[in-house]
Length: 222
Ligand SMILES: CC(=O)CC(=O)C(=O)O
Ligand SMILES: [Mg+2]
Image (cartoon, rainbow, N blue to C red; front, top):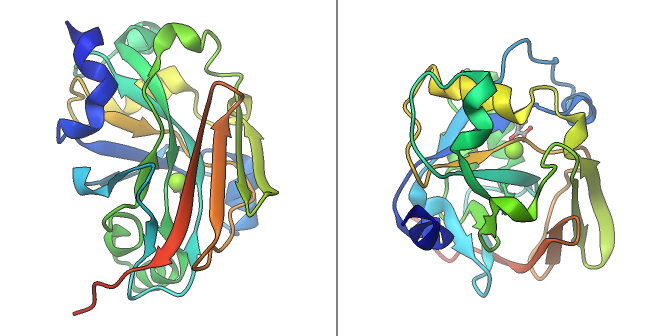
């Protein structure tokens, strides 16, 4: 039953849990300290964006960054999931972008405020198609890449994660109950950079899944 419903998980209104600073090279490029525990934040379901719709630069940002990430789609829910059992809770995967208003994030950091404005705006989580679990037998050894206007900007591998996929599921589920259809973004590798109106983004998980988006400026202003 779950296998039939999961392919359209983004329509369920479930939470998106994001992990930050999970790759050494990315933490270093932003001069962030290496975390001793996973860094977590949330995006609302209104962040989901599917191909065919442009990514909008929020009206308050002049430095929107791409972050390409492997997404884990929960196939069943649980609380305090043991690391040893964690992979059984994955129903599939998705190619994801964690679009980030970097200027806003920097201001939030300086003021000691949460990252909501920088990370949780409408369309801040573009996603590709649902990938059934069996199509990625080695999720901890997977190329994650992104091009802007044909130029390769991010080219990482999930083998370089600081916190492994099972340990992330264990950590998150010790804090909040994970539900079927939840999405976990596992962090971005190095190479994040600014996008501009008219840019074309192409991203991929190896050659298993690819997606394309264009960039526009939001017409929504207060
Ligand atoms: C510094 C960040 O924005 C953290 C983040 O989202 C990541 O993927 O790393
Ligand atoms: Mg991220």
